[in-house]
Length: 344
Image 1 (cartoon, one colour):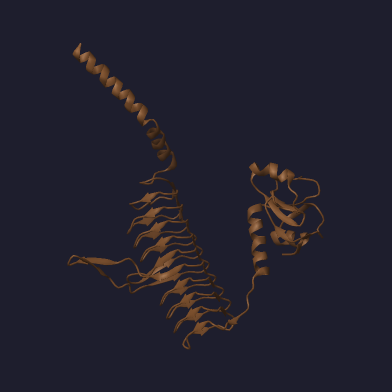
Image 2 (cartoon, one colour; image 1 turned 90 degrees about the vertical axis):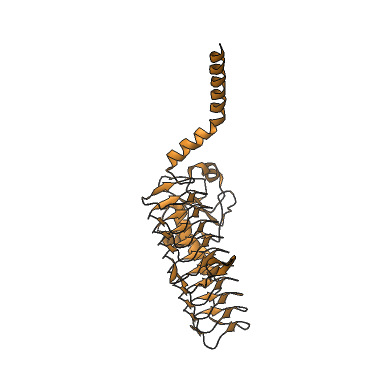
């Protein structure tokens, strides 16, 4: 990274209120670690002590901040964190080592269609009938199964797998080890044995979805498992067969959604949330970490606990549990007094 301060200001749509626009920046760092060539950001009030002593060359600040340490350039923006994200995207583009073409050591079927603008790296496997769109990267060790369609500008990182027939839209990112289209967990118990039920469906991952490392999205038993546009799935999340995840949802690490459930748009699952099978979660629902959902939730809002409740209700229960031992001791003492009165 090497950008003039004026370029940073233009990129983030900010206002330079201190510093020289021709100053060159070549890194991004925290307020504590930044040096004169680094850009940092100050967006949370509790970090003011670090802001006041930072050695950064420039800092992104909110409109409420109009002064800072001597010699530090200040760029006012509406949201410092978002402005840093914009800049990070620019840096990622600058350092990206992308060169189209099929590298030596890649295993590409003669029946596959790889756009000339795509890149396939050594050790990647692309099976018969697969289609890879322009600008997409298939990294080392990744496997693209038979008849898979990968859209434009996707990144399938190392050792990720997309099994036969599944579909990725445009700008999809699969982090290392992600598995799309593994068999749904389907069995019937006959004759004292668990008999496997063939999983004949596919997975459809819509545009602008990112799926984290070692996350798994199972293929449908019949039809489609769908991950909606813009949704982001964290590491080690399990999505079962025939699940429908809506648009712009967030599923945080170690969450699990059981078969045939439906998450509508803008649903957020905190870490380790469990969703029962064959239920629906309404648009705009936010579930706190480790919540367990056994029935459909029909109203948007924030819920925590098992079964999920509005936070005020759940916190009231938690406070009550904290006093449970004390209450039991009081009841025990009262019973003893009553027993003595009866004897008297």
